[in-house]
Image (cartoon, rainbow, N blue to C red; front, side, top):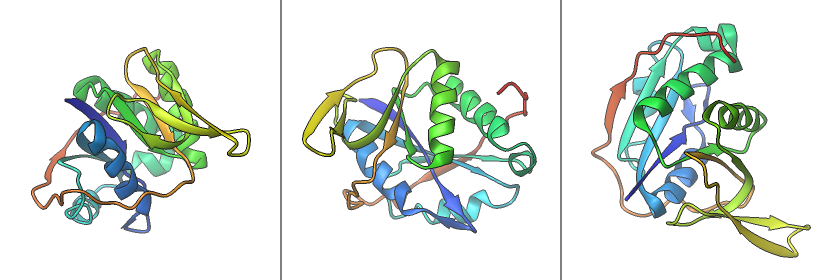
Length: 178
């Protein structure tokens, strides 16, 4: 069974809808691990909002450096978590920040990025809509953990409900190597 890491997007203390959607995609391939990157003291409240999702484990990285150093610090934290957890795939919301993180992360991991995925299969392949929706293609990154950006097609978060989500605080130093 594959291990899929999802980046949990949040703003103003609220977890974004994309977290449930990415979790539903991830669960198709195996175990879903959520990654929360938050200012100090906020990860517990954010992780509690994931209790009724299919996310089996939540890794929380708290640092006030995220606001101070931006994408560089976020990328350092994600890279360190990926090196420890060793997921088979990483699902990232297709936001402007997500696109930047995915591209830089793929370079660091010597991997690839699949953008605007509208579906994700158990074999870790992603479906993309191309040429204005005229065709769909299936893509798969063959090197290490791939970063897949979920596109604009929405999926209803569903499946088994978590409730027993394990939360772990993961300490990482800011390396400043973006």
